[in-house]
Length: 467
Image (cartoon, rainbow, N blue to C red):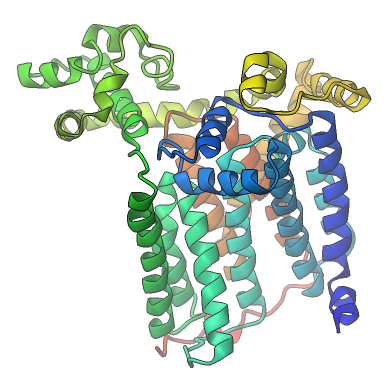
């Protein structure tokens, strides 16, 4: 039975093993993995088992659980490698089994594994890597239902139904918890199941209720049990950037507004440090003016939220221009990859290594070779565009071009864009996390152009709802 399963899904296994080997070479070269300031913060929280929701605490909790088994960032990086290989490989295997051209699909997968940016991101401890791959898994689950022509499936209450529902709820809710703006998927996924006529209204409603219950458990009950600190810092950084856009556009605050804002940061400093691209200058790089301690004052934060949202509403044009400016500038951020990918805490901060009992970073033949590979692909505008920029533009182009094709493609593009938009215009600003998402979704979107023959529209897509 196992042999038959492997035979039927041989491309999944072959491609998964291939991807694991390739990405493991990156991990061996930069062992025990690459870390950013966000990674460092989460690693320290996980070690002390004292959590803040500045980064989604669920992701930090997962790191903490892994630490208790294998105390090394390499263990987290390897889990990311498994996600980043097995899910795309399953995607390709699914399409091959459904009459898509084999050779180009395998070629796309191999290009994906050899992209320097993908190799680097997969060994960087970052929530966005897991988040992107989990959304890809959600898409594959939808794709499977559509290709199998599942139509208005009801909830029969059998053991099989309960098992399927359990895994769906766990996967969908976990995905929504890996980013603060991932909550949108709790609503979108059950709605998509109903409007695509995969589930009846009753089964879609059950899925929604179960996802909401699990989401509320993690974000309220477990949140309280673990005494997780609120995400005041990240909320304030997003809002203060929009408020700064209003001041930069010429808005003169009322006296009461000025009093509230200046308890956090001087308005003159907001004007001086403002740039539409990122809020870093206002928040992270502004310790002499930014009053971080007041963010722990709940009564002040309530006042701050009310005041800042009022300013944003009154200056909505400037604020929208701020968000659009961030989105427009996101493509320039891919250039930061080659300069930041060697930001390995293990090389740059020996005190941190000693304090946290971490293994020293590797510096071997592989490190040298892959470092040269990254720098050579970005040392002039031709190689840089070929390896870093062009794949992004091609990815976005195909996401747009195939939008008019069949329903299964529309689902893929819709979920891809829902993932990309928050990364582009949300948080503290677009950065090279966006590149990884576009690489993954853009590259694999090309797969939908590779059918041997155009399949007929599934009958259920022509029917009306019956639930």
